[in-house]
Amino acid sequence: MKKKHNSQLKVVDAFKQKGIEIDILNLDVSTKTSQEAADAVGCDIEQIAKSIVFFESIQNKLVQIFVSGPNKVNLESFQNQTNLRIEKADAEYVRESTGFAIGGVAPLGHKNRPLYFIDETLIDFHEVWCAAGTPSSLFKLKTEDLLKATEAKILNII
Image (cartoon, rainbow, N blue to C red; front, side, top):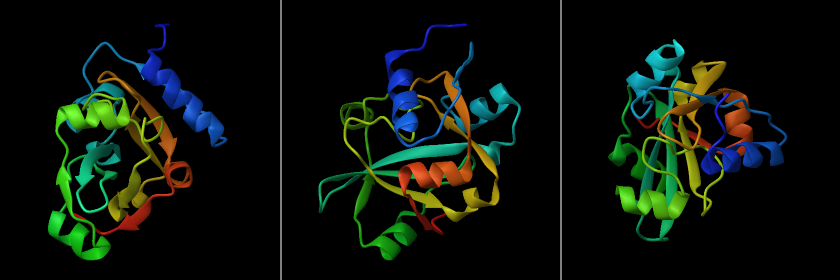
């Protein structure tokens, strides 16, 4: 078994603090994209809980949105429902704010706590796969545990 990366240890610890045990899979292939992640673990691409990080300019906040693998965030719809003005974060901002590189942003373990949102399409799945702190690691999680751990607000944002 491969040694856990420091980023992964932060993720495991953050979930443990929420009373949730996770088991991280370290893979020999990239899981940066939803398709790569789904192929690596043999699940449907729709079961990948893709984390997209945004910068909210009015409140100067980090925003993390979980969407099903093939989906994209509809910015207009999101902004209309939340009154938040978001823009996609660049790689430097993502790393500085979360402590993770793009392609490995986990739900928990961030340097700065984000505002969490989840698209309602992910709620259809009993379990989802999330990035685990590196661009080649994933873990499976009950969708209800993702909601419990992040306290994400459910929206229709695709």
